[in-house]
Length: 238
Ligand code: ADP
Ligand code: MG
Image 1 (cartoon, rainbow, N blue to C red):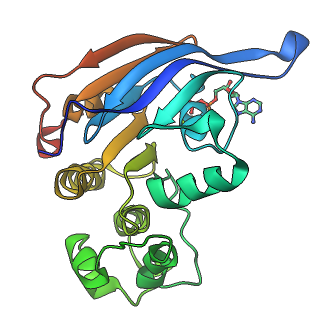
Image 2 (image 1 turned 135 degrees about the vertical axis):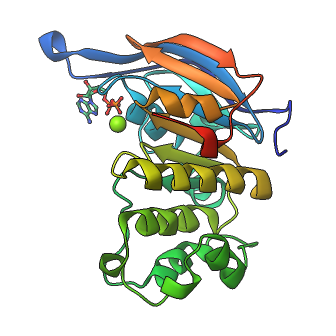
């Protein structure tokens, strides 16, 4: 197991609002939690509850109003914009609901584009085989299924061997069977490569595979629980 007791992602008093006056929305209102290195953390919350905002703050895409985020001992708010860029390139992988692949690049090229960002990229053939994409490597995204596109997006996030993979509704566009395959892949990636994984979703069933479950409600964490006996992604049901 990749799981450890070493704190890796430490969030303290994180706050974020959008808009002003009557239009003001306090999206995050003092989020405090710690995710250990190698854990799979699932954050649940209904649509509009601030899950994407939370990931955007962790990825340094957006600035917080208050609070701190530290990843692997590095405090994001203390970083210069150059170092923040470096953090994003080296430490982070991002998986989106709609894959965001480049349509004019092949499956292999879509993964390769991020490989050079790492001094220690994963070997391409091994990765493509592990993702089940070896036979499809020279096809374009439109020529493969949604599940294969999402596996390609996971490969793109993974190839630079990041410490942290952030997944925003990674199964939101997939059917039940393909969703499970993608979650099984995330589970295997977590085990084999040791990266910490944060998945945000409105699908409560996915939380059963997590080592840690966060539930976002009204800008706060209504739940922050360690799951002592996570269920294998292959056994999830919804
Ligand atoms: P979720 O991912 O859980 O669906 P989001 O983080 O996308 O939630 O959004 C949380 C709230 O913040 C929503 O009310 C949304 O409309 C609002 N919001 C998100 N991004 C912006 C933005 N850039 N400008 C204004 N409001 C935003
Ligand atoms: Mg969202």
